Length: 387
Image 1 (spheres, rainbow, N blue to C red):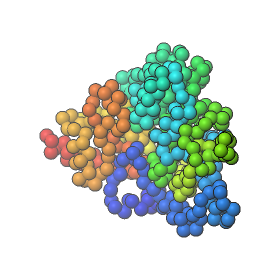
Image 2 (image 1 turned 60 degrees about the vertical axis):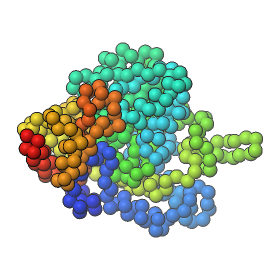
Image 3 (image 1 turned 60 degrees about the horizontal axis):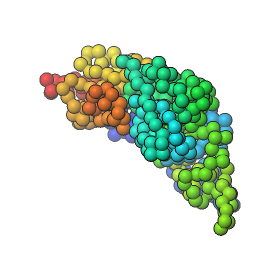
Image 4 (image 1 turned 135 degrees about the vertical axis):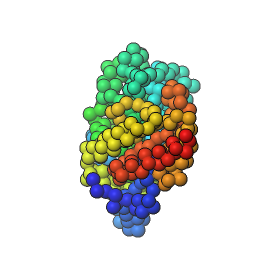
């Protein structure tokens, strides 16, 4: 998979293993944004001049690309947001849960905090636990599902890499009469995700984790669930008509995209989808699996404790005995290797694991086995220093 030539950041000579936080951008995405500013910049939907029409077409074409990439039946069921966090908050706001919510201890704060806020409206929270190897405890899930109004689950953990059986969860939840919201921030960039096949009611992801610009992402919805709901944010573009006495809201997705959107970001997101589509998500997955295999092989000669199951997305969270995660990350940084350390916006999960912080190395399509060699060489140096 010869893609490294497409990524200008590699010229800096940094080993970048912080892809779960955000990915680097290929020239194709950078060029698409530059071309938009250079040749097509205008506001959308409200103008009849050529630039507005071109910008509108580019914006809506990016949604068609996203819908095709994720198996969403209509591009109108793709609501653009600035990231998965906003998408998850929007989903919970639209659902307005008042009863029992079932979620998991491995959720990112972007899922947990909107649910905790729903407690003020009478909702109650229950949490599904984990098996000893970091899988979701499905026996616990089924025992707690009865009576749930809403199920919120991450497709893939940003700490453990665990890939949850979302399709099974959705079916069971729907049989119980519950709606399902899926946090796909860590799955859409790494796995082939099909919204229709999963059957979820809402699915949120971030563009910046899949080669696209920051400030991009989407909430994919089953349109019939929200087509008559009042948007939580109102303004220009979200209405069909307004009088001093009445508002007639626009259809999907415009009613939930008030104001001028991130136009250049949408173009960049479309370019990122094109790029990943050319590579193929199956190839993306195979590449990450090869890196994981090498990582686990090299880790056998270290005192590293790895958290999570063997089958996972392309990330590994670990600790080293008697060395704080921040010290590990700082030492690796001195060797021009970028990783993440801390609780990774998943504090309850770390408390559940009984560890104050972990080091997370996360991989993407431009990472190599040779870089893993540099990583483990640096860890060897670190262990010598601390010994």
